[in-house]
Length: 199
Image (cartoon, rainbow, N blue to C red):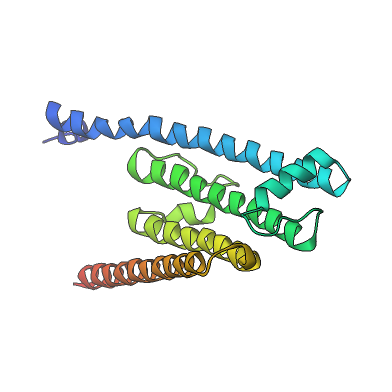
């Protein structure tokens, strides 16, 4: 009669292949460092926005350089300028959320369990995450980021060529169609699995 230890024992080759999943660990650690860069960038932009609002000329020039894309350059902090900077901050936050989903969800799915069951701060989506769910969530996050970029372009449309606006709109539509296709494929797979489980 075999024991669980002998039943679950892997061959050397299988052990090596299974252990290779840990090669992804440096990649997730690198994404954590990228997250730190985004946090630093967010605070630099926020401090400059506050400084510009309080009359700091150096901060104002940095803000105007950040939002100017050619054409008429504003000379002071306007509502449109503030909106563009705030949208930029939201963009950073959404990319940061995307990084968190990739880091936590990817590690949990492809490397090792985090053991967060019962933890009060466990993300709600992590309890049922798998490769398929992760793809759909990433697609939705990318659409959100693309929407922010497109909104920034529309607000500042006077400084963009019509070809650029059309290209960004087409890319956004492509993201939407891709997300719909991923979600549809995921729905088909779920229904197939449920039908197979019934039989």
